Amino acid sequence: MIPLFEKAHQLHLTDTEEEILKYFESNLPSSVYTNLNDLSASLYTSNATIVRFCQKLGLKGYNEFKYQVRKELKQLHPQNFRTDDLVHHSLALFKDNLDQIDEKELEEIAGLLTSDRPIYIYGSNLSSLAAKYLQTVLNTLDYPCILVEWRRLLNGLVHEINSDAVLFIITAHGDARRYLSVFRKAKARGTITILLTCEKDSPLIPYSTFALCTNDRNEEYRHVDINPRLGIFTIVQILIELAARIKQNSQDGGDTFGSLS
Amino acid sequence: MVTLHLDDAVIKSLSNNELNVLKYVYEHSDEVLDMSIQTLAAQTSYSSATILRFCKKLGYSGFAEFKYALRAEGRKDTPGTSAAKAQNFNTRIMIDSLCSNVEGTSNLISEDQLIHTFRYFDSNCPIYLWAPGGITSILSDYFEKLLFSIGRQNVYKIESSKMGEHILRNIHSESLLILISTTGDFGPTVRLGKIARMNNVPILSITPYTNNEVANLATVNFRFFTNQRENRGAEFTSRLPVFYMINAIIRCYLQYKLSGREQTEQGENHDSII
Image 1: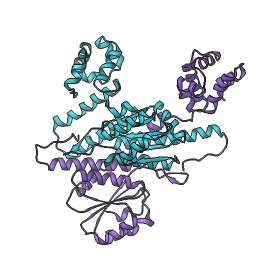
Image 2 (image 1 turned 180 degrees about the horizontal axis):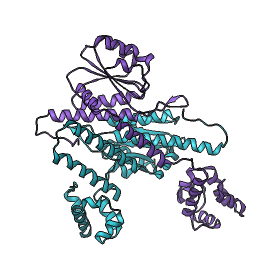
Image 3 (image 1 turned 30 degrees about the vertical axis):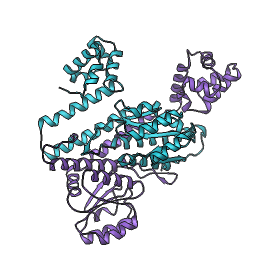
Image 4 (image 1 turned 90 degrees about the vertical axis):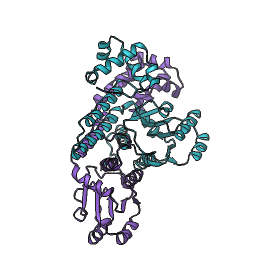
């Protein structure tokens, strides 16, 4: 237990003060962020009562009390919830992902996406959002492309599409059972395939024309996929920027829109 | 030399003292980037409150954002003047700019905002997520899917503004409305925000760093950096900083839940990320 609370328990407290203490103990860690007005409202008491309680503990007021609890909490659980760390960690992952990209390859892919070839973009589950994002923005830039969100449709499609089509497939898990037949067929027919995945050992890679691999981690929480695919979104964004630049260069001088630098 | 986009109305709103600050910033833009608000106040012999007011009148939430904007403007100038046509060089600059937008956004996320948000997530109140259509709806989808995936129930996406108005008019005030706006001033989004405010429904918003209407309506507001762009009327402003922010919120919430549980059931097993 936090030393400050231990100290409080040894004091002679009124019923209301007991309640304040109980509230703090049972609602950690969020209770240390409650403001005075919210607290007094939810405990049906007055601000003055709460301040008096803090003063009984030898502190100047409510804010010092919160500060003290926070400090003691940190000392007690150094491994505990620290948002700064988490935010810095995800920023570090984001930067690592940028460092490992191959600019030349991405430029080549952007060239394909903005060519006159038919473009199919596939993604299912959470990857479908990345696919939809790429498709919507490319359409906005006047490079029409088709979004495919159903796996069976993709399976059928690969037998039918023109051989000059480009198949852009986003799959975080790079699952062979699901997609190997698609990639094999596409390769046999000479269709260009671009694979965007975060599984660097995906068996699909040897069958794809271009393979892009990000550093997202495939993790689960209670058996649900919680891979946020941020690296995938980053690659998609870079492709969009490159496509926008191609668009800008192709426009005849005069016309300008937003800076892309 | 840095140029800030100041229109007449903003300039007119500045007092003489604030105009002197502006002049100083123009003349010493490079040094200002490394100054703290106190140093700048000392250099210009004004109080830091004056500097802060100055930043706010320019549409920034504080001195840090103002400096960020200065820096972003400075970066924009360089490639233009050097006019380097080398493809690879440009690509690097573009990636750096993406990175600085995300980094700036990341620095704006504060623990207090997060904890405030988590209190809503923790209570089982219904969460209404407004999907305004177009690219921004993909962000709402992303937020919705991630909330589901970490086990937050009771999340409802609103896809039609008429339906949204209907829901918000009859809603219980113990709910949460999430508004995401890339400009901060999109009509239907502002409208829903106002209805929610009228009914005392708390609002969590994700908006750009500028002074904007949606942010002003919100109870908790997360801000991001981005450059607004469009192609003949169809906008394609980068959403990457927003994806980043949503992910950061969810990540922190998951960690917060796990650490909270650890405390209450000390010694017992808890769910862990595999």
